[in-house]
Image (cartoon, rainbow, N blue to C red; front, side, top):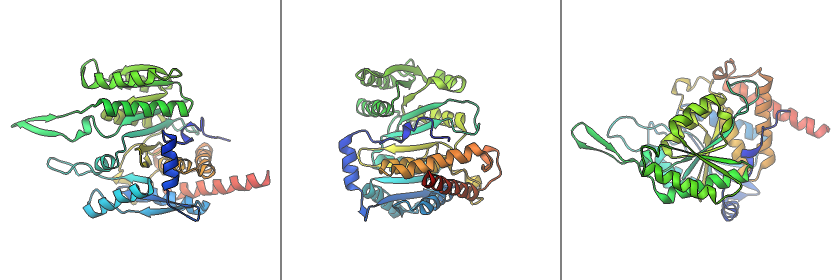
Length: 372
């Protein structure tokens, strides 16, 4: 059976035991049930959320979703506040993709505001080869840990003279160190051996220089971890030519978006990678790559794998390990069988058909387990 190649992303995800205890204590439980914020967002978000809800319902997962219908396309500030409050209360959420208004003079991205307000300082994208030969490379198993609140996304831009724009990239010792600590802790928890800091310190000697220095100092204090720095352009080429060399990659904000997207492309595309955002008081799970896929919206062809795998991570985080494993294994079995695939994986199945195939697989696994 195609069990997850390492199961490594699936142990407790949060860095500090005290934090985990606080989380477990703080989760609202009604008769052993958990309340989880559900933020479907825009584009295919609602269809992906429905896929998860259908699977959870079929399995009788003890989770109640508190659904907040916030749309970045038609933003309502009071609904945005409701969304932030919900995640603060539940401490754990599952999110689709929230669209961002384009053009000058528009408000800051709502994804960004959500991360800043909840202080979700790290974004983690898990890129692993899945069964069924859906990608160009095999044996890829890397994790991108990206700074999520500062860097190029500081939102500090202005016109300093007519036709001259200045964008400020902000890198701080505090946030770089905090990110590096999380990356090292994550590496150790999941039996990973190497941390690669991705940077451009040869040009941005102070900003990226500081990021690199913090990552090096923190990693070298962990004697069981190997550290390397790699310049972002070389890292991009290495990702495409020999991705198996990477283990945990720690990056500033923008580079992480790019490296994470390359990683997704290596293992089957935007539809299959899982991810989550970590703060000290909340964790927000989401598909690993933020693609709205507006062109697919309402057509029932979006690939729910990334969202389902993220929901499995969420269940592990809540301590509902058995349910998480069942979803993860079922998704892999359906992929390996190769009969039911959405168009992005060169198949012709619908989102609903893939979801149903996963549920059938879970049910047949349960029957098999009983008969053993």
